[in-house]
Amino acid sequence: MRSFVLNVTLIGSILTLLILSVFEFYRPYTGDFYFLKLSAYVLLVLAIVHLIFLYVLWFKIKEEELTDIPMRNLEYSLYAIFLFYIYKFYNSLFIMGSFENFDNHLIPDNFMTIQIMISILYFVLLALTFASFMLRKYRVGIYNFQDSDGIESWD
Image (cartoon, rainbow, N blue to C red; front, side, top):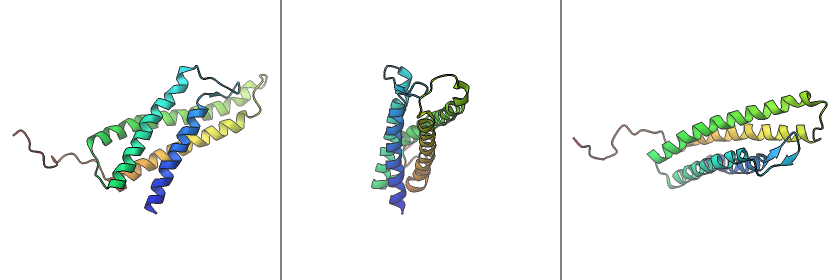
């Protein structure tokens, strides 16, 4: 059961990040993909940090290692990325809610379908990211760097 939760979290996060990275280039009001827009690449850069954290989490669980300072720093950066995911989820809901404002414009037929799917994917990504935080806490351990771990101090 424990490895099942880990596998679902890892594989689900990877697949969700891949699908959302493709949809980041999609513009819902026009129904086209734009690859020259620099803002579409932000999620790809942040996804790299997310994937590195998932790899470190998997490695620590597989090798039964404890937490360390680089993992802590990586997780803290993932907290900021988590806030970005919340913003993207809210933004996808906002775009979906603005559909009625464009009654007189030509909107693609698949607008609502794609926006519902993107909103669901961002919600799933939020849930899986939170699950990875919980996996780290319960399977790898808490961050406790108060003791020196056997390192002599300069006293």
